[in-house]
Image (cartoon, rainbow, N blue to C red):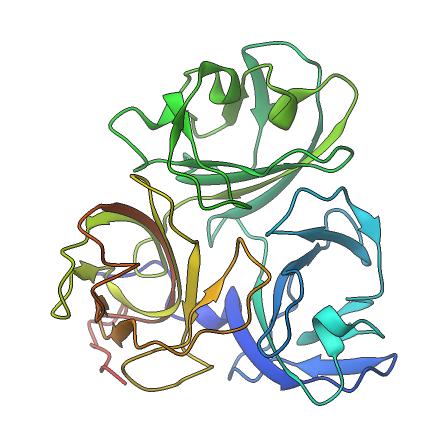
Length: 329
């Protein structure tokens, strides 16, 4: 039997670490075994306090958003081109500071991999359906108003027992909030997600981007777990060896912690980067990346005795479609 729908995760997601040079036309090649032209790149300067910038092919090259703030979309030279196996950065410290280490997480838009970028114009009307192209129900949706300084709104299907009634905010550490004006208390479907009339998701005539993700067995997982506050922390089964993990407590103020398989490369994977702040990379041992999930190794976030949601993407499936298992690193 097939244990995964995607044997080659590098065709749809890769992380790359590189050193900036602050020169125009600095071409970055993804270092995976498979070539991948990314559609979304999410950058973090590991050594200097800067915003975490996001560029995508849907909005167009050079159109910047930041995950740690509410800034409107702006024209920048942080990313100047997507290539067949990477991207090019320009003269911007956030993505190319001279002599500094930069990390970029890169996704390929594909219904096969469960990732769709949706551009839409708000109408200010409650119960508005927005079409997507996942051909599956979204498990995670991140929405940003491109024209106004509104906060990022996040739908996660494990946020609460009724996630369509609640939202998280990507650019703050706030706990989950109950409000009907974000998702109109409507569960997403395999063809649409529904908006309320809040300015953050649906101001009349304003432009928005929605990053929509659906789980794919052996490649991506959008789940929840209970922290235990112990150094022998919670184990989270994903069904694959993660290449990327992001966690967030829904119960209290807690950063959006991002981990990956490239910056440390061994257990414990101790280098968290916070999506919701300008902070540099942390150095506290936090998680182990395993062949079938991840295990918390800390008594604080992301392992306080609270409920956490997470998103994770695979380096390798636990068992591929031929029944061959992978190993821990």
